[in-house]
Length: 116
Image 1 (cartoon, rainbow, N blue to C red):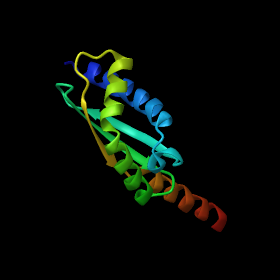
Image 2 (cartoon, one colour; image 1 turned 60 degrees about the vertical axis):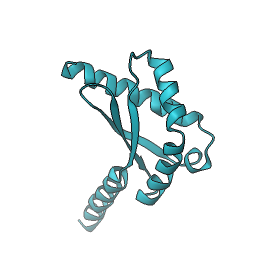
Image 3 (cartoon, one colour; image 1 turned 120 degrees about the vertical axis):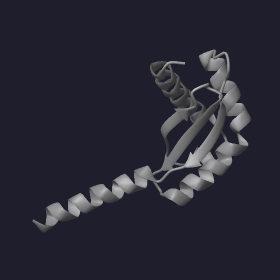
Image 4 (tube, helix red, strand yellow; image 1 turned 30 degrees about the vertical axis):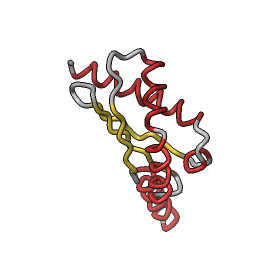
């Protein structure tokens, strides 16, 4: 597949995973401020790595990933139904701390502003 098609499929999968996560009833996922940071789809579209981040930090993201891994089959089926893909990629969820890192950078910048 061409690079632009993989990028488009990645964005479509990301959008649909976000919608499906909102519908999940798992307590490890339900009441968390989760964000799908990015989705990396392999060149043959058979695998997708989904990076999950939480506002509360990396430990919360890891707990949410456990819940998402237990619901992987459901999420994959729903994404396949909604996008009508010929081959729905196998999903692999990974905890990411990018939101927490970004919040720390913003806090440091605010501290620098208050010092001046």
